[in-house]
Image (cartoon, rainbow over all chains, first blue to last red):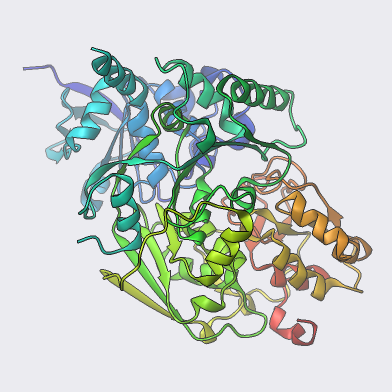
Length: 168
Length: 420
C-alpha cells in the first residue's frame, strides 16, 4: 500500500477572488516564480513564504471568483499546491485548475469545519480521501474525460497526447 | 429533447440531438478572442503544441484593450507578440486601441445568434445578449481552442428570469442586473446558464441586454443569454454578423424561474463589500464621493452617455470629484464628439479617456487612493480592484453615477426626473 503523506492546511474564507490570489499589479512579472512570492498577499501575507510542496488549500464558498487570470491557479501550482478543497469554486478558476493539472474538490460545510488552518492532515497518495484526525473526507472522482486531462498533467499535455495518437 | 436555448446551441455545436445538463460535450467554437494581457501566455502555450497552424484564422479575433496606451514597459511587447502571431497565422481580425473587446466584438459583427464564443476575458458572457453561447476561459484552454477549434463543456443547468412590466423613469438595465445579483448572490449561478425572457424584454435595447449579460459572470454564471428577436436581427444586420447559426426557440422548459416585475425595481448600488452587497441607492444618500466613472464593457455605450449627458449638461462637477468618461469604442467616442455630448462632459469638468479597460481593472487612468470613495458604472468592486485595498467602490447605473457626480455625493437619480 502506498505510503500516506502528511500535509499542511491553508484555510481561507468565502469569495477569495483571483485579485486576492494574485493582484493585478504583479501580472506583468514575466517570471512566474517571482510572481508567486505575492500569492495571497492580502488575505494571508505569510502564505507565499511558508507554503510547502504538497500542502492543501481549503477555501470557502466561490473560491477563485473574479477575473479569468490563469496566473491565479498557476502561482498556487508554482508554490507546490496541487490539491484545492472548497465549499464551491468559481467556474473559470475551476476549469483553469483542471487545465493546469490541479485537482479541485468540492467539500461539505462539515468537512470544511473539520479542516483547521495550519493543521496537518493525511492525504492518500491516490487522492481518494483525506484524513483529518479521526474523520475521513472522501474525494469524489472526476468524470473520465476530466481525469484524462488531470492524469496527463494538464490540458496541453492531453492535447499533445491526442494529436500524437491521431498521427499514428 | 433539448429544451433551453443554451442546450440547443451546445447540441448543434457538438453535433448531437439530445444533450442534458451534466453531460460533457466537445463543442465547435465559432469565435475565439484573446486580449492583450493574456496574448503572451496563449502564444507560449500554443508553442508547446504540435499544431503548427491555428484551426481557422477567420474565427480568431485579437484585441488590445487593457493596456492601451501602454502602462508598463511590458505592454509594448504584448502588442508585438499579438501582431507577430497574427501575421504568422494570417489572423486578420486584430484591433489595437480601437475599443473594449466586449463592445468591438458585437459592433464588428464577430458574434451573432446561435454562435459559440469563447474569450480570455471573464466578461465574455456579455455576448449572450445577441442570443449566442459565450463564456470566458483561461490561457491554456485558449491555446487548445486555437489549435483544435473545439472546447469541452459541461452542459449547464439553466436559471430562468422572467421579466415583466416597465422600468420606472430613472431606473435602467444596470439596476435590473444589480437586482438579479441581490437575489442570486456572487455564486448563485455558479456553473449555470442564465436565460432571460418575458414581455419586458422587447423594450430592452441591445445595449441594455449587453449590460445584463456582462454582469452575469458576477453571479458565477457560465453564460447568459436573451433569445434573439427583431432587435437582435436588426442589430446583426447592421453589424453584418453571420445569421446562419440561429436556433429555434419553442417554449423552453426551465427547472427554476425567477419572476421580476420591472415596475418594482429602484436605482440600486453594489456596496463596497462586493458585487452582491446590493442595496437601494436610498440607503446611501449623501455619502461623499471622490471619483465618478462612466465607461467599461458594462456601461460604456452610446446610450449610457446620452443618459449621463442629459443629467450633467450645463452643470459643474464639484472640485472634490474627478469625473472620468471612457467610451467603450472609438466609434462610440466619435459619435459623442459629433453629437456634442463630449463637450457636455468637458464643460462640466469631466475627463474623457480613450476606449480601454485601464481604470476598471485598477491599472491606470483613475486608480483610487487609500481614502478614495468612488461611484462607478463598471462591474467589479472587490477589495483593491480599482486601486488601494482600502478604497471604496459603489457600482451603479450611469444615471446614478452622473447625478452623484453633479452633487458630489451619492444621490438618487429619481430625484432628477425632469432631467431625464
